Image 1 (cartoon, one colour):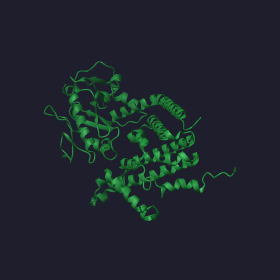
Image 2 (tube, chains in turn yellow, cyan; image 1 turned 120 degrees about the horizontal axis):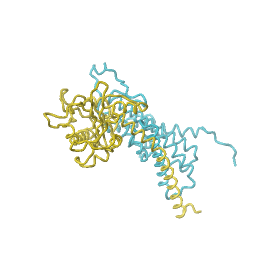
Image 3 (spheres, each protein chain N blue to C red; image 1 turned 60 degrees about the horizontal axis):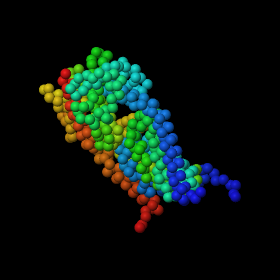
Image 4 (cartoon, each protein chain N blue to C red; image 1 turned 30 degrees about the vertical axis):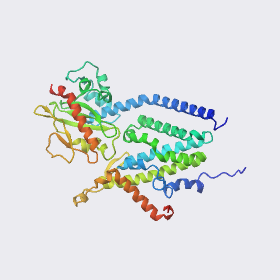
Length: 233
Length: 220
Protein backbone atom coordinates (compact mmCIF):
# COMPACT_ATOMS: atom_id res chain seq x y z
CA UNK A 1 0.00 0.00 0.00
CA UNK A 2 1.16 3.54 -0.62
CA UNK A 3 2.69 4.60 2.66
CA UNK A 4 2.02 8.27 2.07
CA UNK A 5 -1.55 7.82 0.84
CA UNK A 6 -4.65 8.91 2.70
CA UNK A 7 -5.95 5.38 3.09
CA UNK A 8 -2.79 4.14 4.75
CA UNK A 9 -2.60 7.18 7.00
CA UNK A 10 -6.17 6.78 8.21
CA UNK A 11 -5.77 3.06 8.70
CA UNK A 12 -2.53 3.55 10.60
CA UNK A 13 -4.00 6.18 12.91
CA UNK A 14 -7.13 4.11 13.60
CA UNK A 15 -5.27 0.93 14.42
CA UNK A 16 -2.80 2.76 16.63
CA UNK A 17 -5.53 4.51 18.58
CA UNK A 18 -7.51 1.30 19.07
CA UNK A 19 -4.45 -0.64 20.24
CA UNK A 20 -3.36 2.08 22.66
CA UNK A 21 -6.86 2.58 24.03
CA UNK A 22 -7.41 -1.14 24.54
CA UNK A 23 -4.14 -1.66 26.36
CA UNK A 24 -4.63 1.37 28.61
CA UNK A 25 -8.24 0.47 29.39
CA UNK A 26 -7.19 -3.05 30.29
CA UNK A 27 -4.32 -1.85 32.50
CA UNK A 28 -6.47 0.75 34.26
CA UNK A 29 -9.21 -1.78 34.89
CA UNK A 30 -6.78 -4.42 36.17
CA UNK A 31 -4.97 -2.06 38.51
CA UNK A 32 -8.05 -0.27 39.80
CA UNK A 33 -8.62 -2.44 42.91
CA UNK A 34 -4.99 -2.07 44.01
CA UNK A 35 -5.09 1.69 43.46
CA UNK A 36 -8.35 2.00 45.40
CA UNK A 37 -6.86 0.07 48.29
CA UNK A 38 -3.78 2.31 48.25
CA UNK A 39 -5.94 5.41 48.34
CA UNK A 40 -8.02 4.12 51.23
CA UNK A 41 -4.93 3.19 53.19
CA UNK A 42 -3.34 6.55 52.52
CA UNK A 43 -6.53 8.21 53.75
CA UNK A 44 -6.52 6.14 56.94
CA UNK A 45 -2.84 6.94 57.52
CA UNK A 46 -3.59 10.65 57.15
CA UNK A 47 -6.58 10.49 59.49
CA UNK A 48 -4.60 8.69 62.18
CA UNK A 49 -1.65 11.01 61.72
CA UNK A 50 -3.82 13.98 62.66
CA UNK A 51 -4.14 12.52 66.17
CA UNK A 52 -0.47 11.65 66.31
CA UNK A 53 -0.78 7.93 65.60
CA UNK A 54 1.90 6.81 63.16
CA UNK A 55 1.00 3.86 60.96
CA UNK A 56 2.23 2.13 57.83
CA UNK A 57 0.36 0.50 54.96
CA UNK A 58 0.81 -2.91 56.62
CA UNK A 59 -0.85 -2.10 59.96
CA UNK A 60 -3.11 0.84 59.16
CA UNK A 61 -6.31 -1.21 58.76
CA UNK A 62 -5.91 -2.74 62.22
CA UNK A 63 -5.04 0.55 63.86
CA UNK A 64 -7.95 2.30 62.17
CA UNK A 65 -10.29 -0.38 63.50
CA UNK A 66 -8.78 -0.10 66.95
CA UNK A 67 -9.00 3.66 67.38
CA UNK A 68 -11.87 4.69 65.13
CA UNK A 69 -13.65 1.56 63.92
CA UNK A 70 -17.34 2.20 63.29
CA UNK A 71 -17.29 5.69 64.82
CA UNK A 72 -17.52 7.40 61.47
CA UNK A 73 -20.64 9.37 60.70
CA UNK A 74 -21.98 12.26 58.69
CA UNK A 75 -23.46 15.44 60.03
CA UNK A 76 -25.36 18.01 57.99
CA UNK A 77 -25.07 21.78 58.04
CA UNK A 78 -27.45 21.96 61.02
CA UNK A 79 -25.14 19.66 62.93
CA UNK A 80 -27.54 16.69 62.97
CA UNK A 81 -26.23 13.20 62.55
CA UNK A 82 -27.34 11.45 59.37
CA UNK A 83 -28.40 7.86 59.14
CA UNK A 84 -25.67 6.27 57.03
CA UNK A 85 -23.24 3.42 57.56
CA UNK A 86 -19.68 4.03 58.72
CA UNK A 87 -18.36 2.71 55.43
CA UNK A 88 -20.52 5.12 53.43
CA UNK A 89 -19.40 7.99 55.64
CA UNK A 90 -15.77 7.00 55.12
CA UNK A 91 -16.25 6.94 51.37
CA UNK A 92 -17.71 10.45 51.08
CA UNK A 93 -15.84 12.21 48.30
CA UNK A 94 -14.95 15.66 49.57
CA UNK A 95 -13.83 16.63 46.11
CA UNK A 96 -17.50 16.57 45.10
CA UNK A 97 -18.90 17.91 48.35
CA UNK A 98 -16.68 20.98 48.29
CA UNK A 99 -18.37 22.22 45.12
CA UNK A 100 -21.81 22.31 46.76
CA UNK A 101 -22.97 25.26 48.84
CA UNK A 102 -22.15 24.98 52.55
CA UNK A 103 -25.71 24.14 53.57
CA UNK A 104 -26.03 21.16 51.21
CA UNK A 105 -22.74 19.44 51.94
CA UNK A 106 -22.36 16.27 53.93
CA UNK A 107 -19.76 16.55 56.66
CA UNK A 108 -17.96 13.37 57.74
CA UNK A 109 -16.75 13.12 61.33
CA UNK A 110 -14.20 10.57 62.48
CA UNK A 111 -14.43 9.97 66.20
CA UNK A 112 -11.18 8.66 67.61
CA UNK A 113 -11.03 6.99 71.01
CA UNK A 114 -7.49 7.12 72.33
CA UNK A 115 -6.01 4.67 74.82
CA UNK A 116 -6.27 7.16 77.68
CA UNK A 117 -10.01 7.45 77.15
CA UNK A 118 -9.93 10.84 75.43
CA UNK A 119 -12.17 11.39 72.45
CA UNK A 120 -10.93 13.41 69.45
CA UNK A 121 -13.11 14.64 66.62
CA UNK A 122 -11.30 14.44 63.31
CA UNK A 123 -12.79 16.69 60.63
CA UNK A 124 -11.76 16.41 56.99
CA UNK A 125 -11.26 19.68 55.11
CA UNK A 126 -10.70 20.38 51.45
CA UNK A 127 -9.96 23.44 49.35
CA UNK A 128 -7.93 24.92 46.54
CA UNK A 129 -4.18 25.49 46.44
CA UNK A 130 -2.23 27.10 43.63
CA UNK A 131 -2.16 24.19 41.19
CA UNK A 132 -4.86 21.89 42.44
CA UNK A 133 -6.79 20.66 45.43
CA UNK A 134 -5.40 20.71 48.95
CA UNK A 135 -6.96 18.79 51.80
CA UNK A 136 -6.34 17.73 55.33
CA UNK A 137 -7.66 16.45 58.63
CA UNK A 138 -8.04 18.58 61.72
CA UNK A 139 -8.37 16.79 65.05
CA UNK A 140 -10.20 18.67 67.79
CA UNK A 141 -10.24 17.95 71.52
CA UNK A 142 -13.44 17.05 73.32
CA UNK A 143 -14.18 20.75 73.84
CA UNK A 144 -14.58 20.95 70.04
CA UNK A 145 -12.46 24.08 70.12
CA UNK A 146 -8.80 23.30 70.74
CA UNK A 147 -6.86 21.73 67.87
CA UNK A 148 -5.15 18.53 68.95
CA UNK A 149 -3.34 17.99 65.66
CA UNK A 150 -3.65 18.62 61.95
CA UNK A 151 -2.33 17.14 58.78
CA UNK A 152 -2.46 18.58 55.29
CA UNK A 153 -1.70 17.24 51.88
CA UNK A 154 -1.94 18.43 48.31
CA UNK A 155 -2.21 17.19 44.77
CA UNK A 156 0.50 19.18 43.10
CA UNK A 157 1.77 22.22 44.96
CA UNK A 158 5.30 23.38 44.12
CA UNK A 159 7.97 21.35 45.96
CA UNK A 160 9.83 23.52 48.46
CA UNK A 161 7.14 26.21 48.39
CA UNK A 162 3.43 25.41 48.62
CA UNK A 163 4.17 21.72 49.12
CA UNK A 164 5.60 22.59 52.53
CA UNK A 165 2.07 22.43 53.96
CA UNK A 166 2.54 18.68 54.12
CA UNK A 167 5.62 18.95 56.36
CA UNK A 168 5.58 18.32 60.09
CA UNK A 169 7.18 21.69 60.78
CA UNK A 170 4.18 23.48 59.31
CA UNK A 171 1.55 21.17 60.78
CA UNK A 172 3.02 21.26 64.30
CA UNK A 173 2.11 24.93 64.51
CA UNK A 174 -1.59 24.08 64.64
CA UNK A 175 -1.34 22.17 67.91
CA UNK A 176 -3.12 23.94 70.74
CA UNK A 177 -4.67 26.67 68.59
CA UNK A 178 -8.34 27.36 69.20
CA UNK A 179 -10.98 28.06 66.59
CA UNK A 180 -13.59 29.84 68.75
CA UNK A 181 -13.20 33.10 70.64
CA UNK A 182 -15.99 33.78 73.16
CA UNK A 183 -18.32 31.51 71.24
CA UNK A 184 -17.58 33.22 67.92
CA UNK A 185 -15.97 31.22 65.15
CA UNK A 186 -12.62 32.78 64.16
CA UNK A 187 -10.88 29.75 62.63
CA UNK A 188 -7.07 29.60 62.47
CA UNK A 189 -5.52 32.25 60.28
CA UNK A 190 -2.49 31.54 58.14
CA UNK A 191 -0.59 34.79 58.50
CA UNK A 192 2.16 36.14 56.29
CA UNK A 193 5.10 37.70 58.04
CA UNK A 194 4.81 35.59 61.15
CA UNK A 195 2.63 35.48 64.25
CA UNK A 196 3.67 35.83 67.89
CA UNK A 197 4.29 32.49 69.58
CA UNK A 198 1.36 32.89 71.92
CA UNK A 199 -1.22 33.73 69.23
CA UNK A 200 -4.12 31.38 69.71
CA UNK A 201 -5.73 31.74 66.28
CA UNK A 202 -2.79 32.14 63.91
CA UNK A 203 0.07 30.23 62.34
CA UNK A 204 2.95 31.33 60.10
CA UNK A 205 2.34 31.17 56.37
CA UNK A 206 4.91 29.58 54.07
CA UNK A 207 7.32 32.00 52.46
CA UNK A 208 7.14 31.64 48.70
CA UNK A 209 3.90 29.70 49.04
CA UNK A 210 1.52 32.63 49.32
CA UNK A 211 -1.33 31.31 47.19
CA UNK A 212 -1.22 27.90 48.84
CA UNK A 213 -1.19 29.53 52.29
CA UNK A 214 -4.17 31.68 51.38
CA UNK A 215 -5.94 28.63 49.99
CA UNK A 216 -5.33 26.77 53.23
CA UNK A 217 -6.62 29.70 55.24
CA UNK A 218 -9.78 29.87 53.11
CA UNK A 219 -10.22 26.09 53.29
CA UNK A 220 -10.18 26.11 57.10
CA UNK A 221 -12.63 29.02 57.33
CA UNK A 222 -14.93 27.39 54.80
CA UNK A 223 -15.07 24.03 56.51
CA UNK A 224 -15.17 25.30 60.08
CA UNK A 225 -18.18 27.34 59.01
CA UNK A 226 -19.77 24.19 57.69
CA UNK A 227 -19.07 22.27 60.89
CA UNK A 228 -19.97 25.18 63.17
CA UNK A 229 -23.41 23.87 64.13
CA UNK A 230 -21.99 20.45 64.93
CA UNK A 231 -19.13 21.93 66.94
CA UNK A 232 -21.45 24.12 69.01
CA UNK A 233 -23.63 21.18 70.05
CA UNK B 1 26.36 -7.66 2.03
CA UNK B 2 28.85 -7.21 4.77
CA UNK B 3 28.57 -9.78 7.53
CA UNK B 4 30.53 -7.63 9.92
CA UNK B 5 28.31 -6.54 12.81
CA UNK B 6 28.88 -3.37 14.69
CA UNK B 7 29.78 -4.13 18.32
CA UNK B 8 27.02 -3.21 20.81
CA UNK B 9 29.19 -0.63 22.50
CA UNK B 10 31.22 0.67 19.62
CA UNK B 11 32.80 4.06 20.07
CA UNK B 12 30.06 5.56 17.92
CA UNK B 13 27.39 4.06 20.14
CA UNK B 14 29.14 5.08 23.35
CA UNK B 15 29.21 8.63 22.08
CA UNK B 16 25.41 8.55 22.08
CA UNK B 17 25.57 8.20 25.85
CA UNK B 18 28.53 10.41 26.68
CA UNK B 19 27.67 13.20 24.25
CA UNK B 20 24.49 14.35 26.00
CA UNK B 21 26.31 14.35 29.34
CA UNK B 22 28.72 16.94 28.01
CA UNK B 23 28.92 18.82 24.76
CA UNK B 24 25.47 17.69 23.54
CA UNK B 25 23.63 18.19 26.82
CA UNK B 26 19.89 18.54 26.21
CA UNK B 27 19.40 21.33 28.73
CA UNK B 28 22.55 23.43 28.56
CA UNK B 29 23.37 23.01 24.87
CA UNK B 30 20.20 21.94 23.05
CA UNK B 31 18.10 24.03 25.49
CA UNK B 32 15.33 21.41 25.64
CA UNK B 33 13.32 20.54 28.73
CA UNK B 34 14.08 23.80 30.50
CA UNK B 35 10.54 24.15 31.85
CA UNK B 36 10.59 21.06 34.02
CA UNK B 37 14.18 21.76 35.01
CA UNK B 38 12.92 24.95 36.59
CA UNK B 39 9.76 23.52 38.11
CA UNK B 40 10.88 20.48 40.08
CA UNK B 41 14.34 21.45 41.25
CA UNK B 42 13.53 23.26 44.50
CA UNK B 43 14.41 20.01 46.23
CA UNK B 44 16.84 17.22 45.42
CA UNK B 45 14.40 14.34 45.77
CA UNK B 46 11.84 15.31 43.12
CA UNK B 47 14.77 16.14 40.82
CA UNK B 48 16.11 12.61 41.14
CA UNK B 49 12.74 10.89 40.76
CA UNK B 50 11.77 13.11 37.84
CA UNK B 51 15.09 12.28 36.12
CA UNK B 52 14.48 8.56 36.48
CA UNK B 53 10.94 8.85 35.11
CA UNK B 54 12.13 10.86 32.12
CA UNK B 55 14.91 8.35 31.39
CA UNK B 56 12.34 5.54 31.46
CA UNK B 57 9.86 7.27 29.17
CA UNK B 58 12.58 8.53 26.82
CA UNK B 59 14.21 5.11 26.42
CA UNK B 60 10.97 3.30 25.70
CA UNK B 61 9.46 5.93 23.43
CA UNK B 62 12.72 6.08 21.47
CA UNK B 63 12.66 2.29 21.18
CA UNK B 64 9.03 2.08 20.06
CA UNK B 65 9.29 4.92 17.56
CA UNK B 66 12.51 3.46 16.19
CA UNK B 67 10.86 0.07 15.70
CA UNK B 68 7.91 1.69 13.96
CA UNK B 69 9.96 4.22 12.02
CA UNK B 70 9.52 2.62 8.61
CA UNK B 71 5.77 2.28 8.96
CA UNK B 72 4.87 5.72 10.27
CA UNK B 73 3.19 7.93 7.63
CA UNK B 74 5.29 11.09 7.63
CA UNK B 75 2.29 13.42 7.61
CA UNK B 76 1.05 12.23 11.01
CA UNK B 77 4.40 11.36 12.55
CA UNK B 78 4.15 14.01 15.30
CA UNK B 79 0.73 12.69 16.31
CA UNK B 80 2.06 9.15 16.37
CA UNK B 81 4.98 10.24 18.54
CA UNK B 82 2.71 12.07 20.90
CA UNK B 83 0.40 9.08 21.22
CA UNK B 84 3.31 6.79 22.06
CA UNK B 85 4.65 9.22 24.66
CA UNK B 86 1.23 9.78 26.21
CA UNK B 87 0.64 6.03 26.27
CA UNK B 88 3.90 5.42 28.15
CA UNK B 89 3.34 8.26 30.58
CA UNK B 90 -0.16 7.08 31.47
CA UNK B 91 1.16 3.56 31.85
CA UNK B 92 3.91 4.74 34.22
CA UNK B 93 1.42 6.83 36.16
CA UNK B 94 -0.99 3.90 36.58
CA UNK B 95 1.76 1.50 37.61
CA UNK B 96 3.20 3.96 40.13
CA UNK B 97 -0.25 4.51 41.64
CA UNK B 98 -0.70 0.77 42.06
CA UNK B 99 2.74 -0.34 43.16
CA UNK B 100 4.58 2.74 44.42
CA UNK B 101 1.83 4.93 45.81
CA UNK B 102 4.16 7.09 47.89
CA UNK B 103 6.34 7.95 44.92
CA UNK B 104 3.31 8.69 42.77
CA UNK B 105 2.05 11.10 45.41
CA UNK B 106 5.33 12.96 45.44
CA UNK B 107 5.54 13.24 41.68
CA UNK B 108 1.84 14.05 41.32
CA UNK B 109 1.34 16.34 38.34
CA UNK B 110 4.93 16.12 37.16
CA UNK B 111 4.43 12.63 35.74
CA UNK B 112 1.73 14.02 33.47
CA UNK B 113 4.01 16.87 32.54
CA UNK B 114 6.56 14.43 31.10
CA UNK B 115 4.26 14.24 28.06
CA UNK B 116 5.05 17.85 27.30
CA UNK B 117 8.77 17.56 28.01
CA UNK B 118 10.38 18.85 24.84
CA UNK B 119 13.40 16.57 25.22
CA UNK B 120 11.24 13.55 24.47
CA UNK B 121 9.58 14.89 21.33
CA UNK B 122 12.87 16.44 20.32
CA UNK B 123 14.78 13.19 20.50
CA UNK B 124 12.03 11.20 18.80
CA UNK B 125 11.93 13.62 15.92
CA UNK B 126 15.67 14.16 15.66
CA UNK B 127 16.98 10.69 16.36
CA UNK B 128 14.59 7.78 16.78
CA UNK B 129 12.82 8.39 13.46
CA UNK B 130 16.05 7.89 11.54
CA UNK B 131 17.97 5.32 13.52
CA UNK B 132 17.90 1.65 14.47
CA UNK B 133 16.42 0.56 17.81
CA UNK B 134 19.68 -0.07 19.69
CA UNK B 135 21.26 3.34 19.00
CA UNK B 136 17.86 4.89 19.76
CA UNK B 137 17.81 3.23 23.19
CA UNK B 138 21.34 4.48 23.87
CA UNK B 139 20.36 7.95 22.73
CA UNK B 140 17.43 7.80 25.16
CA UNK B 141 19.65 6.77 28.05
CA UNK B 142 22.21 9.42 27.18
CA UNK B 143 19.80 12.30 26.84
CA UNK B 144 17.79 11.23 29.86
CA UNK B 145 20.96 11.06 31.91
CA UNK B 146 22.20 14.39 30.58
CA UNK B 147 18.88 15.94 31.55
CA UNK B 148 19.00 14.24 34.95
CA UNK B 149 22.55 15.39 35.60
CA UNK B 150 21.62 19.05 35.25
CA UNK B 151 18.41 18.55 37.27
CA UNK B 152 20.31 16.95 40.12
CA UNK B 153 23.00 19.65 40.13
CA UNK B 154 20.39 22.42 40.18
CA UNK B 155 18.28 20.61 42.80
CA UNK B 156 21.35 20.06 44.96
CA UNK B 157 22.46 23.68 44.82
CA UNK B 158 18.98 25.12 45.36
CA UNK B 159 18.00 22.91 48.27
CA UNK B 160 21.39 23.13 50.00
CA UNK B 161 21.63 26.91 49.90
CA UNK B 162 17.90 27.48 50.17
CA UNK B 163 17.12 25.34 53.20
CA UNK B 164 20.40 23.86 54.46
CA UNK B 165 18.97 20.36 53.97
CA UNK B 166 19.02 17.73 51.26
CA UNK B 167 16.20 15.24 50.66
CA UNK B 168 17.00 11.84 49.21
CA UNK B 169 14.48 9.32 47.89
CA UNK B 170 13.78 6.73 50.55
CA UNK B 171 15.78 8.50 53.24
CA UNK B 172 14.02 11.81 53.58
CA UNK B 173 15.35 15.12 54.73
CA UNK B 174 18.94 15.29 55.97
CA UNK B 175 20.34 18.43 57.53
CA UNK B 176 23.62 19.27 55.83
CA UNK B 177 24.54 22.68 57.18
CA UNK B 178 25.39 22.09 60.85
CA UNK B 179 23.63 24.10 63.57
CA UNK B 180 26.88 25.71 64.64
CA UNK B 181 27.18 27.47 61.29
CA UNK B 182 23.76 29.02 61.88
CA UNK B 183 24.91 30.14 65.31
CA UNK B 184 27.82 31.95 63.66
CA UNK B 185 25.25 33.96 61.75
CA UNK B 186 24.79 32.03 58.51
CA UNK B 187 21.32 32.43 57.02
CA UNK B 188 19.65 30.26 54.39
CA UNK B 189 18.99 32.10 51.16
CA UNK B 190 15.24 31.89 50.70
CA UNK B 191 15.59 33.21 47.17
CA UNK B 192 17.22 29.92 46.14
CA UNK B 193 13.96 27.98 46.37
CA UNK B 194 12.07 30.50 44.28
CA UNK B 195 11.84 29.83 40.52
CA UNK B 196 14.15 32.63 39.29
CA UNK B 197 17.16 31.06 40.99
CA UNK B 198 16.68 27.88 38.95
CA UNK B 199 17.09 29.94 35.82
CA UNK B 200 20.16 31.67 37.21
CA UNK B 201 21.68 28.36 38.36
CA UNK B 202 21.15 26.82 34.91
CA UNK B 203 22.64 29.99 33.44
CA UNK B 204 25.75 29.63 35.57
CA UNK B 205 26.13 25.99 34.52
CA UNK B 206 25.86 27.03 30.87
CA UNK B 207 28.42 29.78 31.43
CA UNK B 208 30.90 27.45 33.12
CA UNK B 209 30.43 24.82 30.41
CA UNK B 210 30.93 27.27 27.55
CA UNK B 211 33.96 28.92 29.08
CA UNK B 212 35.61 25.50 29.26
CA UNK B 213 34.51 24.35 25.82
CA UNK B 214 34.92 27.10 23.26
CA UNK B 215 33.30 24.99 20.52
CA UNK B 216 29.93 25.56 22.14
CA UNK B 217 30.15 29.33 21.83
CA UNK B 218 28.30 30.24 18.65
CA UNK B 219 29.29 33.48 17.04
CA UNK B 220 26.31 34.45 15.01
